[in-house]
Image (cartoon, rainbow, N blue to C red; front, side, top):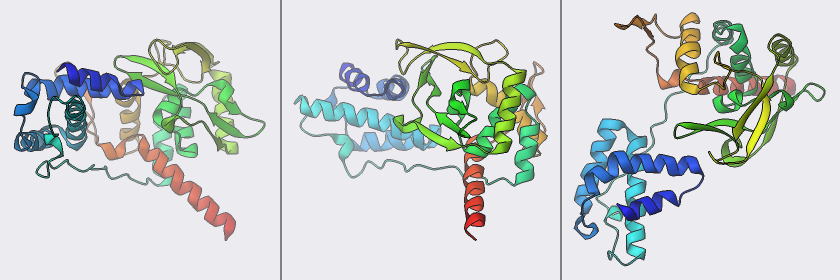
Length: 287
């Protein structure tokens, strides 16, 4: 679908275009790619969306629908078809099903932090204390930590674009500054002394973007940046097991440990914990 690729490629930022291109390749083109646009019926689209929702979940179904919807809108503008069948009332787009986020108790969070190897412990500590996102924690650099003002300047995140990684602005393309407690400052000072941050370079915002170099606070064992999937499997989930949040892992035929977790136990739960802890502190100060 040449027109679909044109629509997908027009989306920005790059991560959005990549997501749409994947949905086009995996879900839209195999069903509608060889069809004449005027033959596509609303009932077919409705059945297709429902099938995607059942097989892959609401997020995948919504993304694929957006690609088809945008493609058909562009076809209407080009006068290839008179109206967009994806806009028919019979087509029901599944609502987002947000996972339930667990507000962990203090002792659980402390055990999760303790379950991290020392070189990665600041990731969980700062995440729980300051509410930073996973990509922001992976992209945190030495110069972002201001021990004089006792704040952390959030200037970038580690972002995956297809198979490549870039430095990019934090979510909503907005830098921000978050307060840092004495305990968090001590943890970061000790980490910097034990694991001296060294320069690391990645493109900015796009895979062919301007190269930017910062002294990352945490690096992976291969001396490169931390990748979310690797961290989740080899650090985060073992820490959850250490804390008693998830069950003991099973072992596959190759002897690899396989932890059974759920979305509610992802790193975003630390952000929820941080927001609750901050609200408690503010309430205490005002009472």
